[in-house]
Length: 222
Ligand code: SAH
Image 1 (cartoon, helix red, strand yellow):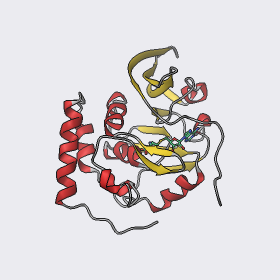
Image 2 (cartoon, protein in one colour):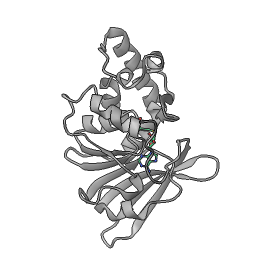
Image 3 (tube, protein in one colour):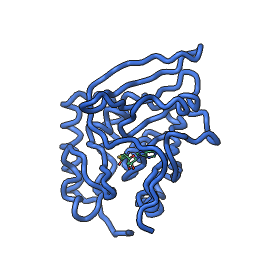
Image 4 (cartoon, helix red, strand yellow):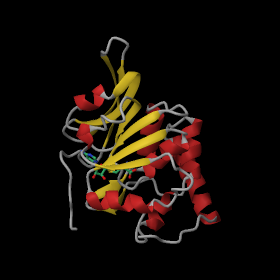
């Protein structure tokens, strides 16, 4: 699925408008806004979906999965308080867009996907040359990546049934996890901070709508 794609003035103009909209909706972190403004979101979509790339909405990426709404990506990225050099674990690679936003914030990203065909697409990541720091894994995000732990930050981009304790164990002290947790009608965005004594500090934010975080891996049609 390698396609020659260009990022022209029209794309850049639409992206600036999208960035302004997200700012109006309340995102204030200038680094996050700059990342949204610089990454060509249309590179992460199929030809049929490309034309909607700069609308503030989630879009289908196949396998019943979605690329998150740009506002949601910005909201989670802002809550994560990324510093250059941070080691970040992402659960739910999907389109690779959120991982790229984190890489643009100069983090080292370790991202896991449970859908085989979406993971297979990561081989064709269009911006590999620009963001060599992103590492892609196929597996069950509930397990995390114990070999690479501990992480400064953990971001879950699917609706979780609860806070996965295995992932909490893989966080550094003072580490932060941003996770949407199911509350019946949608998910509550939570920010969990691992305190010096190991206790968890929990802050609750708005409600969002994510595809579910599911156990195990999906092999799909091979
Ligand atoms: N971050 C993505 C959002 C994709 S939607 C993006 O920027 O496009 C959420 C993704 O999480 C889906 O691709 C889904 O397959 C994946 N997912 C759900 N449960 C998972 C799990 N337990 N481990 C890894 N990935 C999971």
